[in-house]
Image 1 (tube, rainbow, N blue to C red):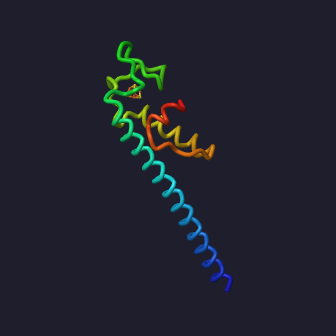
Image 2 (image 1 turned 30 degrees about the vertical axis):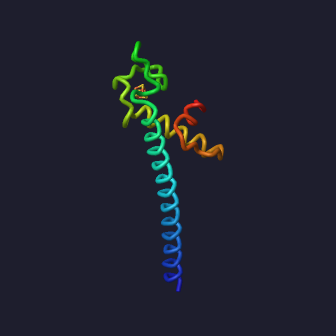
Image 3 (image 1 turned 90 degrees about the horizontal axis):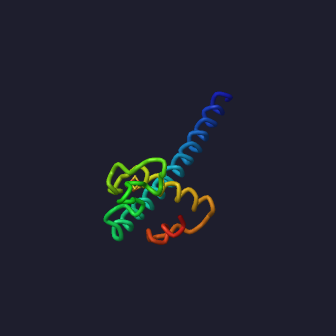
Length: 108
Ligand code: SF4
């Protein structure tokens, strides 16, 4: 009896853990999809990274370091981190996530 109960408990635990993992995966997926959308939107406006200062090679998102990519922001870790942070910040504040990069850029 007691061993049955413990099996049942662990099944429940497994289900709980699975549900939690699914939720986490959903969240991650939502984040990934939004980041991809923002990247796509940014590309329709900017050929070169909007945070790149051509004259000084400075990166406005990371003033401590210079941009080593000449403003090529596709897959740039600094740019991706910026989008990730924005996602966290906006979802934590329960704000609506913009669908257009320019709307997001205004919130910087
Ligand atoms: S490091 Fe990335 S975010 Fe910064 S200016 Fe260069 S491409 Fe843009």
